[in-house]
Structures are given as C-alpha cells and as structure tokens.
Image (tube, rainbow, N blue to C red; front, side, top):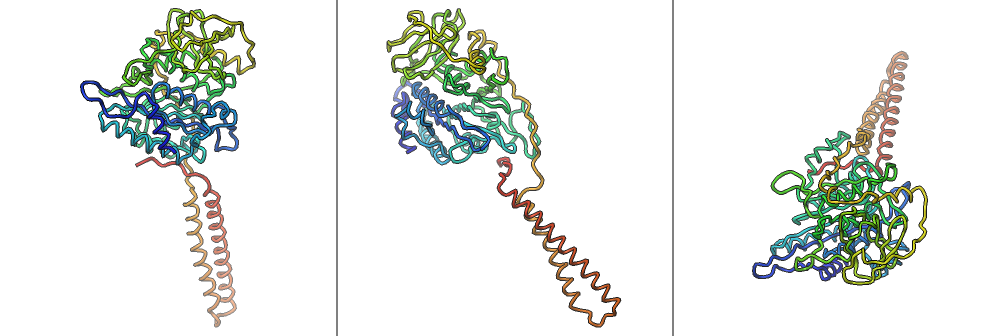
Length: 499
C-alpha cells in the first residue's frame, strides 16, 4: 500500500524522479514528504485531539499543490472522513506503516541523488506528543515514535540535501532536543549532547519551544500552529513575492501572527531553527523552506494578489468551509496567496466579516473583488483571545529584524531512579541465598549433638532459633525487594543515549 501511495504521489508530482535531461539543463530538486496525523492519545488522562487528522490532510494537500510528492498516513474521524471521501482508504499511522513510508522515501531519494538531482525531505506530524522520564515522543495509532526513532530512522537514514521537520504536538521541543542521562540536563543553548547531533542540513519548525501544550481552535477547525504555518507557506509570509518561503519569512510571520495575544494560556509557543550554512556553523535564515515551482523550475502563479491593505486581517475558505489561509499584510505591502484550483473560494475580512467570492481560475487581485454583507460569528473567551491572532500587520521590516527565539531553560525532571526492575529482582534473588544457607545450617545443627548436656542443648536451640529468625527475615526482605521489581516491570525504562 505504501509503495502504491509513493508511486501515485510521484506520478502526480510536478517534479517526477527522472534522470536529468541531457544538455546544460539541470533537473529541478526532487521533494518528498511523509505527513502523519493522529488524534488519539496513549494517556488515559489526555483527551484525544479533534483536528490533527484535518491538519495532516490540509498539509498533505498543500505540499502536493506545491509540487512535493507527499505520502499521507492518517486516521480520520467521522467528520473528517465525510469532508474527504477520497481518503476512505487512507493508510493508518502505525509504527510499521511509518517505517515503511520512510524506507521507500530513502530509496527514492537515493535513486535521485545517484542520478545527480538535488533532493529535499519533509516530515510533518500533527497529533499528541509528550515526555516520559526525559524522553520525548510522538503518539502513533499503535505506539510511540521516540526521539531515538527520529535520529535513527529519519536523520541518520535520510541522504536528502535538506530535511525539514515540522512538528505540531504538545512538548514537541523535547521530541528533538534531549536531556542528559540520569536527570543531568545538557546546556540548552549548546543544542544537543554528543550522542544526538542535529545534522547541519536539517531545519525545524516546532509548535512548542518548551514544556508547553499546543492549541486547537474550533472556529478554524485546525491546530493554531499548523494553520499558521500553512498560511505562511501559501504565501502570506512571502514578502518579496519570489515564490520561495524562507525560514526567516516563516519565523517572522509566526511572531507577527501571535504578537497580539497577551495571555500566555492562549498564546501559541513555537521554535524555529533553520539549517546551518554549509561553509560555517551559522544558522541560515535565508534557507528556503518551500518553493512554489513548476516541473521546469519556473515559478507557479499565485491565485490571489493581496494588493489592498485596507482589508487588514483576512482569511480564505473553500466551498466546504475549510479555512485555507490567514493573512494580514501591512498597508504598504503586497503579498500573493497560492490557493487550490477548486472554485469558488471565499475571502473574508475579520471583524466586519465582509466577504468576497473568487470564481475565476486565473489570478485575481483583492482590490477587484466585490464585498457582500457581514455574517455573525461566535464569541467566547477563547474566541476573543484567538481573534487577536494575525492582529499585527506583516511586512518586510519584520523579516529584516527577525531573530529566532533562543532555546528555553529545561524544566526540572525527576532523576533516574536508582532501583530499576531488573536490579530489584536480582537483589531479591540474591537475598534468598543467605537465607537458604542459614536455614540449612540450622537444620544440620539440630540433627547433631545427641550427647550434649542440657546447658549445651539450650545454647544450641537458642542458636538454631536465631538462625531461623535470620533466615526468615532474609526470605521476607528478598521477597519484598523482588516484589518491588515485579511492580516496576511494566514501567518503561529511561531511554539510553545512542552509541
């Protein structure tokens, strides 16, 4: 099934993995993606998500429209399945399916590299993430994908010229960044310990920069971070309108989008780290994250030119009410959005909710669209807070002054327990040995000494009693320690550093 999905994705991609053409022409980069979405949780105290599946599908469709050969692994709920009937045979996000998809991606990338093509790999994940005993992980339908899996199954295996990791999950920072063994934390500004090194060709977009939760919002039927990233990638962050979205543009866009929310309870928290420049160890904010390019390398034409700053904060929906992108260009700035080919599309102005309809397939300018009367929107505490998203106009100046946030200080974690299950069971078993020996000596002592005097018999019996009590005490201690080990057995052991 995974092989078929990759074949279909490559067949539909604007950049098929063929050998370079003869002559001076250089084949465009081959771009592959694995997109994973799962609403469920592996913790009974954590509620399932509602829109992780929707976010995964929306991200998969965006990448496909941009010419990326994307493979989707998602478990849809009933509502999402009704919106996307073509996904009724979607591949489940199980560990085996994820590893299979990655294996086929590496094979395609290696084939393209052998043919002389540049390659890029995207890993998108939307769902639950958590940290247990210092180990960050993402939740799959049948288990976990841990930080060790990320490094061993993705970063060590990918031979792509550039990797892009976009993770929308609670505590996603600790899915990539690690703490030292035994609770001794590594220095966050230094990045990673000697065992886990982020390759210089890998960039990150993480929904949380600390031990924080991510947010979903019912009004947009999406995770806040995923929707903001998609808005940026659809062109709302492309200040120079060159069709290439850089890490600087996307990072500055995320900062501006969330600047209006004062309450930290609702303010999205994120972390951006671009790839490092090949000639130095400096982060390269000018590195492209996604380019809208046709198969011959030429720029794709955006669908909507935002040439009217008077609209301020606006968003675009499709005919099914799915929110495609939000934008808030500064008054003196012009942006352009890359949108799906289906029509009609609807452009709404936040606040007044004035609406315009796009029916033309060709590129249209915002200033030429006619407005319709406003609609009534829902209200509430979260709605009022999230309404302040995208409240800051976005401009080139914000990109010029954008600086990625530094890694945060790590929260305290409990030290690794000295008593582990194997150790406890082993110590319990060892404690049984002296008990057996003392009990044996007591039995041998009792069998001998028939010619002893009454005083000697009394002394012998006192010694036997003492040895029996000591043996029973040792038995009891051994059973208790081994029992503690048996209780600890179901608990996962802390992840050891990779060799």
